[in-house]
Length: 553
Image (cartoon, rainbow, N blue to C red):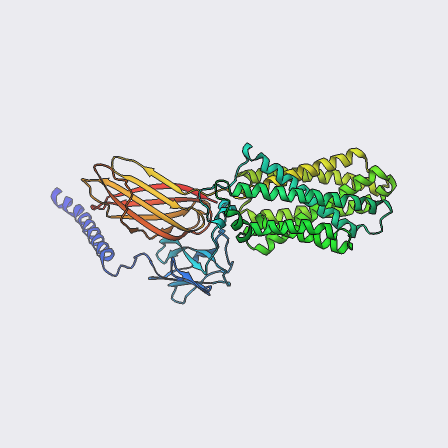
């Protein structure tokens, strides 16, 4: 009886075990079958294709997958070379849910990043990024863009990104040049702004315009001589002809000298002619500065011209007010009404054009803290704020009918001088840091690894990976390189197609065998912080992973 009861209890249990085993076997067969229902979706086709150059802007982005994807989950976006989205349009899913398309606006020349993050119908996430090129984009701008040696075919000269004691003479001459330029241009503009404004003012203008022109000519000659000598230091004197006749900066220097001389002939002409002369010489300076390097060039040069013209009106007007105040207080009071309005308008334009230039020069405002250029700009901004305070006080006094006071005029003049000095310094220093090639090498018992990126700037780069494995392991079977943006962590990785090449550098290590890989292309589409992930497999498919962080500007 006991045996029978035990058998009846075990029979249902044994049936459950057998049913579970059968179900497990069926599941294994289902997942192992060639047409598995839960296989993950894979990207089969892209338009545009990765790492391809197109002469014209593509009309849309299309990503085709081998299986259905979720229509309302995921993202598809296209970024320009400053990591900005080129469109806010939403991607559309095809009727069979196997492809995504994103309509594009007309793209200009540049490097573009396609980033996608989707979810397949079975809930598996898929993400990635790739790049394509439209037209012939200009080389990325960094400190090297401000080096005039390139036009002369010179190599081996660094670019000024920090202030040094050895450059004191250059900065002193630049301060003199900028002060003379703004002072002279301002004095030549004010006869048009202050016509029929008293009997004393024309005599002051007649005397000081000629003095200003003489000062400007001396300052321009010193400025050209010192900078030409610095550029051609260590090179033959025959290169002076090339510098002045075959380079943009040389031709602009000739124009500055010619306009400085022409000013003496124009000083007695109608105020309109003198104003046009001032506009011409300020335009030459605007065209030859940092603004000429950045895009869009028309906007940057225009902002620079407005900035210089506004400063000239302020400097020239303050000079005339100070001279009038010393000679005729009543006429100084009448002129102060006109000057206070012009000065406030000039300072407003100075601030607006300065903000515009900063936004054009710097990819991000955080770049203000990377170089001396940013530090000097912050100092200049603080001085301008003080000037606004002094100018506002002067304006309030004049509206009440009071004369300007000597302390306020002296404070305004002192701040003006400091701003000119700071401007002369930071217009010589590069707004952007200098990019340095990435050179990474890691020694280890199981693997030596070398990673290089040259020149390490947004756009086309050469990427090199070298792997040394022990002789007992043999040469590397493969190496994979993926780049991750640390500033835009939501973007998928960019796969860099490495190819083996014969390396001729003497970088052998005893007991190790070397394999070298190389790729060249726009795989770093925008500046910022990056992480390179390098995966190396040996002949037995054992994988080693190394990460390298670097940045560019």
